[in-house]
Image (cartoon, rainbow, N blue to C red):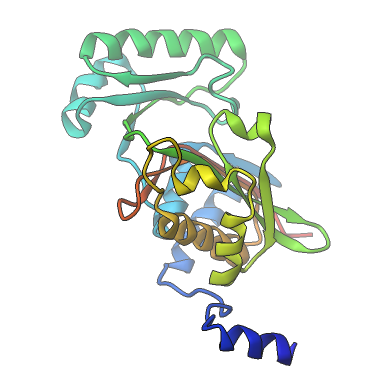
Length: 262
């Protein structure tokens, strides 16, 4: 191990330290405690999960929950077009399967129609689902979609996952895993070890993706799940990555909490 470290240093690699950044850990712990109060587990849909991600500095899109179509005008005034609209329900995990997603909404007429369709589809998909409304979210720009995730192994503890995201993650199964908390070097190796890394480097005239933004988000996931053992599962899919230097943004997320009390 000493010789290995010396070789790394001789190559100028000084990134094996655990990445540190500022986050209000107590605030996140308070949110988790409130959601788990009196429960063994709790599923946090996108809007709720985003509360914790915001505490840890993830780049998020502006969004609002609309519970009645009469509220759409005021929400659009705040967010602006175009928007994405998604079912908000703790009982519907896969929103697309339920017909609960509409993208690139550009008018109030489209938004009103989308609201009615989403609610109708959700009730048909799961008649007993608790429907909190429809999430109206700022539409992200085009970019490369990747997935970031975490799970908690009973023996090894928190493990982070990274791969190409969106609809391709289940088809390609091109993902990689690391134990948390991670060093910067581990995060970099994680990104570069997927088979489709060339897509992030830029192919067929597309610009290289912002790898530093991906790395920062991976390290935030790593720290988040290491700090809060109640997080049993976390998915950010997709994280939309823009060209080099332009950053990334969380387009969808969910968190599963489980009580650590015996």
